[in-house]
Each structure stands twice: as structure tokens, then as C-alpha cells.
Amino acid sequence: MLTEGHVSLVTGAALGIGAGIAELFARNGAAVYLLDIDAAGAEVKAAQIRAAGGEAHAMKCDVSHRGDCAAAVEAAMKRHGRIDSLINNAGIYPRRVFLETSEADWDRMQEVNVKSLMHTCQLVLPHMIARGSGKIVNISSVTLWIGVEKLVHYVTSKGAVLGFTRSLAREMGRHNIHINAVTPGAIKTEGEDIHAVPAEIAAIQAQQCLDRRIMPYDVAAACLFLSSPLSDGMTGQTLNVDGGLYLH
Ligand code: NAP
Image 1 (tube, rainbow, N blue to C red):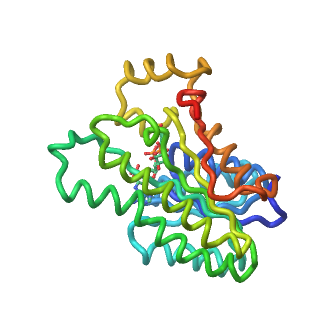
Image 2: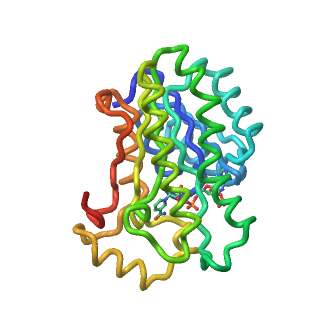
């Protein structure tokens, strides 16, 4: 499905959705760079991908640090001379009652979930522009459509991801660069075990059209489509991968 010799950068790829994206892209022939603040976790996942016959490189990267992002982009360009896709997946979602949310909580959320996109895109886009093609997928969240209490800072950040996606798509279309977003629903990940309440998850599943948990693979499949020539007619769009929780 992907172009020959495809090289992809996936942020937040040690666990959860990002790990699912890295695995699926590698299975489809891509050389994958796993960028994660958890260097050891990224290396474990990269080693699993290599053991399964794929090409994977782990990079320690806090996406809120421009220098870390620059080092990862430089490493990929040095080894492969091209970056075909960038999946901006890394994100945090600690719950906070709005009135108890500190300025530091707010700023960290926006730095990791939003400002990081400025870093990675500004660093990758010059290389995509030089080649006259590229695919960027930004991971937002279905919470943007429905609103969720104790996640005002998070949902605000995920709204910004869509504004970023749409405006940058307008600016980059002339370079044949496609920039789209995915809004996952309640995905079964390791992060969910820390942040979510089982009863809440069961209630969400009951509201989905599909009576099953939506898995990292499901989100990865949408990212694969948006990184492949099959989506060449699409940019500035958002795909909702939530089992039919929220219907547009
Ligand atoms: P996850 O299971 O928590 O995994 C995220 C990975 O990103 C972890 O390895 C984490 O490392 C890493 N990470 C955290 N901060 C980072 C940073 N500053 N720089 C680089 N890596 C960082 O997350 P997930 O549930 O798969 O979510 C992935 C994305 O999907 C996020 O953007 C999230 O908002 C979005 N999303 C998730 C769901 C869901 O149901 N899971 C639904 C809608 C949207 P540590 O573990 O060390 O922090």
C-alpha cells in the first residue's frame, strides 16, 4: 500500500496507538523511526519489529524539545535521504478538574500535544517540499466532538490539532503535501489502564455502533491509508476512528 522505500517518523511509538502505527507501517514495508520520550520502551518496540522482519529505529525524543525532534529528522535523512510520512501521535492526557488546573499543567499539555507539531512539521516539511511529496497525519481525539469533563486542557489541545491540520493543509497543498487528521475514540491502550475508569470505558462501548473495543491497529489502518497513494485526493480532512461513537 505504501510507496517503495517509504520512510516514516512516528512519535510516541513505544506504546499504544503509536506502537500499533509503527508495527503496521513496518509490516507494509516502511522503514520506521520510533520517536519517544521513553527511549528504552521505543527500543523494545523497535526490536520486536525488527525480529518480525521489519526495519525500525528507536530515537529518544521528547517532542516538546525541538532539539530532540531535529536529531531524529537528521538521523532519518542521513540514513535514508527521505522522509515520506510523519505521524504526530505523541500526546498526554492526565485528568484535571478545570478549576484545579495549574498554569504549568496547561502549558505542558499544549507543549506536548500542540507545539510539538510545529517542531516536527517545520523540521520535516523542507525535506518533503524538496521531494515534491509527503504525508502528515496528526492524531487528535473524538473528545473534541463530544467534550469531556476534567479534560478541558486536553480537549482544547486536540481542537488546536485540527486547526493546525486544516491551515497547514491549505499552505502545503501547492507542494503536493497531504496533511490530514485522525480522531480516535476510546482505544484500548496501556495509557488507558492508567487514566481511564473501567465503568466509563464500558459506558462508551455501549454507545458505539460496533460492540467491540477499538484497537491501536484500527487507528493505525487509517494512518496507513492517509500515508499511502490511496488518499492522494485528500488533504485537510479528519477521519473518525471510534467504532461509531460519534457520527458526523
Ligand atoms: P500512550 O499509551 O500513553 O502512549 C503514548 C506514548 O507517547 C508513550 O510511550 C509515552 O511515553 C509517549 N510520550 C509521552 N509524552 C511524550 C513526549 N513529550 N514526547 C515523546 N513521546 C511522549 O498514548 P495513546 O493512548 O496511545 O495515545 C496516543 C495518541 O492518541 C495521543 O495523542 C492521544 O491523545 C491520542 N488519543 C488516544 C486515545 C485513546 O483512547 N488511547 C483516544 C483519542 C486520542 P511515557 O509512557 O513515558 O509517557
